[in-house]
Length: 337
Image (cartoon, rainbow, N blue to C red; front, side, top):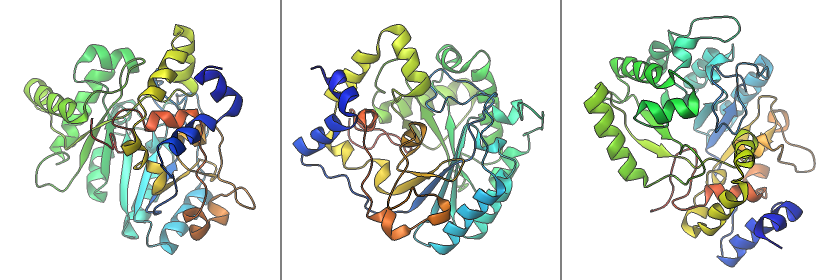
């Protein structure tokens, strides 16, 4: 039986077997980050998107669920970071309220920002989002911004025509507000995803290339570059199937397993919240419906810090994406190349 056949038959068997073979025990080490998916709606519909986000999606977190998340942040001081993602999280009507209230609680707020939502605005209401750079600066948010490459062709190929040009314009406006500039205290990190069925290259080398090219060509600056492996789930998985590359991509992830990366994956110190309040080990598990379950399925309404800190992390074949090569997390590579 091939690796792929065995994975399909037993779901998480092979990844668990790989961990055991390498004497790696994945158990939560802390719970310091609450990552919240505010909506699956997005102004873009990227080819690699593991969320299947698009302007047509309607899933949006309610105010009641946002308030439940804020209650968790207030009650648990060890959770010091709120990581907001989507879709485009700014399309949730309660986004600004959530950020302001979390900041009042003394939490560090990270926003997964796609750069172009600033100009595109809300895909249904047409509400302008051009105030976002000033808002981000006023709340001292850390921005993690998507930019697949420092050249137009590869970015537009992955995200759509004209996306690169709008992204650069947005990046420069953020720079004008202090983001990415030394001494400003306003952090702007970029995210690189490979275009196609490849593992990302060396993060440090790519960061140097991005900084050199963006500065020379556009006068744009940023703090750090995160390299993230494309996960073989949902939209990207369907793309791989159409191209006949799913099996070879899975093989590449499995054969590139890195024990050092496995010991630093993001599920060891965070819990992910779906738009409906359900709890998951990570954003990828959320997309596959792999909800954390104790005596009952866990949500923001029966949140139990101690139980979550002692939970068993749910594993499946896509976990190989986080442990391939230098590894991959929401903060980029997690091991040496």
